[in-house]
Amino acid sequence: MSRNAGGSRVRGPNSALTEFLRERGIDANAIRHRYEETLQQQASASSDTVVTVSGSSATSRSRSREVETTVASSSRSRKRTKKKHEDSDDEGEVLARMARPRPGQIEFCAECQCRFTVTAYSKAARDGNGLLCHSCGSKYAQEEKQQKKTQISSRKRKKSIAAALLDKQEFAVPKLQDMCIKLIARYIEDVEMLGDIGDFNMEKIARILSRNRSLKDNTLKLFLNPSIKRLHFWDCSNLCSDSLELIGSYCPLVESLTLSMCGQMTDKVIDYYSTNLRNLHSLTINGGFLITSGCWLRFFDAIGSQLNRFSLANTLRFNRESLEAIVRNCSGTLEELSLSRVGSLKVEDISLLLQLPRLTALELSYMRDAITDDIMIDLLRTFGPQLVTLNLDDSGDLTDKFLLEGVRPHCGRLQNLSLALCDGFTDIGVRDVFKDWEVNNGLINANFSRCVNVGDAGIQALIDHSAKTLVVLNLNSIYKLTSATFQLLASSDCEFLSHLDFGFVHCVGDEEIEVLTERCKSLQLIEAYGNIRITELAKIKRGVKVAGRQSDSL
Image (cartoon, rainbow, N blue to C red; front, side):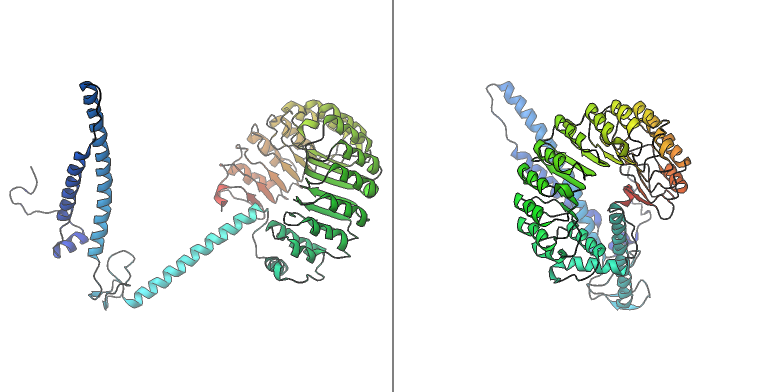
């Protein structure tokens, strides 16, 4: 039985909004009743629109009717439920609109209790009860505006900090010199001459322009100077072959030249360099896929005898004949050779490097089909004793045999070793290389990123051997590592370790990173991408940047 039966007038507590609506004769039940009647009318009208499917027999027709009736009823119920939600939202908006005093009425300010005339621009109080007068509303609007500005500035600051971390830099107040350089780079199209700003600042501007893809034919001339000796451009994608040729015309004394992403460079440009750049000692070309093997033959025949460093990446036209030209012309001077993603070279071609006995730095990366254990052991037997840098990234065919018979006995002066993506190495093989390796005094830069078969034993042997000399250590995606390895790293005397990468190594959390930053005094950058256990709650020592935490996202 209903509580109101028998004419009882006892009522429970009501909200202020309900009392306000009742005083003005507005009944929420009546509004709801009208909506329910509308829904019933729509439901009855839609029930007459069910379509039946005729069949060959009475049984099939009856089954079809049952299916159609079920589908129609379910669709009507879904529509009815959705309509109820929409109507309830509309009803709430109508009630809220009716509860607000209309413009022209006299009200009392909820803040200062003074009388004022309601307008369409009158603001509601903070707690939602009542309105504010013009003076209180203006004050409240200014506070809201200031609060929004604070929120926007905090978001911008957080974004700037995250962007600086991605660039492996520290977010701080920039120097006046850096601000001027950025301003020049922003309006580089309007600059007529850079003047005598020094090679270091010139290189900074070139880096910014390369990052923004702003190095174009008209801006290239700002960097061309007859007295310049170092010229490095990291994004030449917008430079045509004629503009690249201008380097040989305006900079005849250049000694070190770096051109990356130079997809428009042709044979004509390289031929022009071979005749005009007579002081060139170091050349780096990345992405020059239009340069033919015949052009490389002419280039090395012309100035190969003066090169002591050559780096080439991302091309398929550098073949055996080109490598033979290097061996024939550069064997007496070449000390650093880097070949990356040169897909036309094979195993038998790499053996030509045996005729380069002066090499101190060698990179043969991302050439999986051309690198084997036997050929690399022969190479290290030839020039391994003076080798300082060795990069064999993505050489999946290498095994522990290369480490034990090539690196360990022959590379006593090795300081920089990069073996990323070499999944043929085992934990035991890496351990046996570094354990009691007395011939070598320690590595400065070690990269075992994504060597998925390496674990605690191999990396702990590396730490025991090179703890006092390590500066950069990359352990990215070595999933088998445990926290014991990082406890050993923290307890070892790694006084020079400044860059540590253990991204996607899920055993590292806030506790481990706190101990590492406290014990490794020179640590400046930690890359922790993919480590969900490292949060913003970790107490990081001042001066150490942690890149890759989810809390530092843009």
